[in-house]
Length: 91
Image 1 (cartoon, one colour):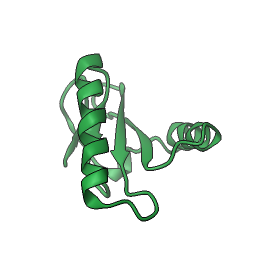
Image 2 (cartoon, rainbow, N blue to C red):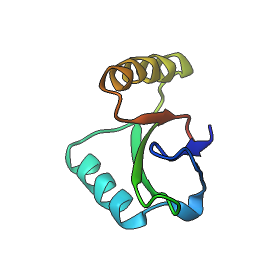
Image 3 (cartoon, one colour):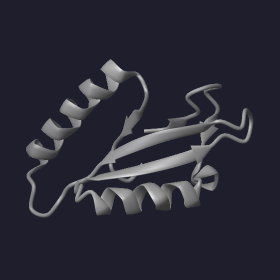
């Protein structure tokens, strides 16, 4: 899935990853005991805003069906909140 700025729709690349913010979110995630997700923050060079993405990842020996169910459930919550973009693992 191509990542785009939530504000100006510019295409974002790994070069735009805000490593400091992403690392802090990852530390908080681990501290909270969350598994099977990864949070990433990207800074748009065009408009300067941050866009946040949640990657749903396989945890342990989860089946693909379980991962897809978690992804669908979180996608529904995100849609209701209209605040995050979900992306597939490794994108």
